[in-house]
Image (cartoon, rainbow, N blue to C red; front, side, top):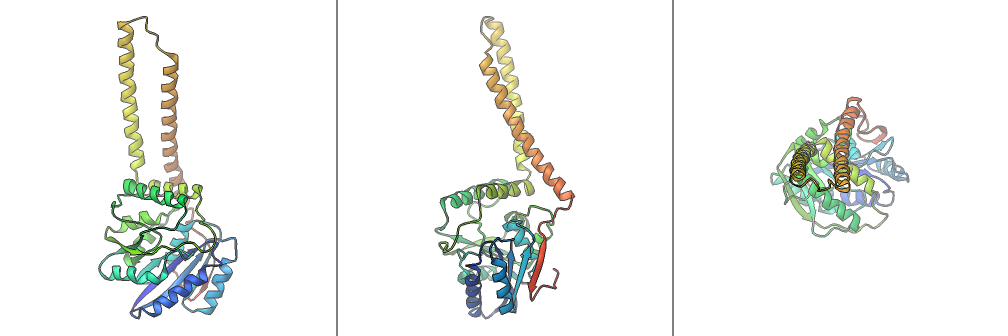
Length: 314
C-alpha cells in the first residue's frame, strides 16, 4: 500500500491548522488504497501555532511537528518537511484552508495516470488583488527564466512522486525555490482543476518585500538568463553610443556651428550610468548568493521536532 505524506508549512495558523488536518483525515479515510502521514512545519510563527501542532501530534500518531528556530520562509519550511517525509507520494498544501484538502483525490489520480507532478489549478482565486498580481508576475518570471510551459499553472498545492522529491532534496544551498526545483527535476507535469476557497481567518503573510525576495530566488538560483540579458543590453548600448559618436562627429564637420548640447549629453550619461548600476547590482546579487552558499548558510534550522518521525533522518 502506497504512503502519502502531507507537508504543510505553518505561519500564523493557530486558528486554521486543526481544520486543515481534520479535513485531510476525513478525506483519506475514504481513499482506502493509501496510508498517510502529516508533517507540520512551524516557520517560527509569532502566535500559538506550534502549541496547536504539539496538541495535534499528541492526539494523532501519524503527525510530525517541526519547529524552526527562526522565520526562514515558506519554501525553506517546505524543504524541512520534504526532508522528513517518507511517502511514495508527497502532497504540499497551505495551512489556511484555501487549498481544499478534500480534493486531494484529484491530485492523486493525476499521479496514478502517469504524471510525475500534479498541480492544482484554480478557475477563480480568492486572493487579494495584490496576491493575484504577484501570482501573475511569478507566472511570467517562471516562463521567461525557467522555461515553464505557458499552459501549465503552478500553485502551492501539488503532489509529487518520491523520485522528484529526492531530486529536490539534493539541493542543499540557501534560498530554495520549490518551483525551480520541480521544473529542474521533471517536465512530466500536469494540472487538475480544484476549487480555491476564500480565506476565513487572517491575511496573507506575503508582503511585497517577500514576493520580491521570492522572485530573486527564482531567477538567480536557477537561471543565468538575467546575466545574458545584461550582456546583450550592454552590447546594444555600447553599439548605440559608438554610432551616436560617429553621428556627432559627422554633424560637427558638416555644420561647425551646431552646438553639441550639454543637456542631451548629461541625459545620456545619467541613463547609461543607471543601466550600469543595475547590471552591477545584478552581478553582485549572484556573487552574494555564491558567497553565502560557500559559507554553508543553512536552508533552515530545526529547533525541535515532535511526533512519530522525530527520530528519523531522511
